[in-house]
Amino acid sequence: MNVRFDDAPELWDLRARIQRGITRLFARARSAGAIRADVTAEDLLFITLANAGVVAATRDVAPDAWRRNVGLYLDAFRPVHTTELPAPPLTVRQLADVVRPRDAG
Image (cartoon, rainbow, N blue to C red; front, side, top):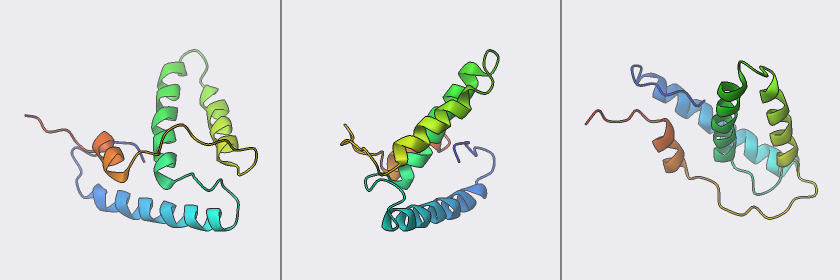
């Protein structure tokens, strides 16, 4: 989900299809009361980016540390004992800018 496809533009369509599926899944989960109302599909991509940083930073010293991080994120998505989030989620455009290939110029 958070890998840049600089040399494989055909994978952008696949990424878009996956993101649409995640958006539908989040809508269903929200409707069922399984996740907090203010969590977005973009939040999922954002946390996978953050978790990739945890994986990279702890790979040599604690290779399973990412598992705890994911557990914390999953708890944060639960619809119980929530507090208002201090900032809005990233927009689709902001996330696309993070993972989109950068121009060479």
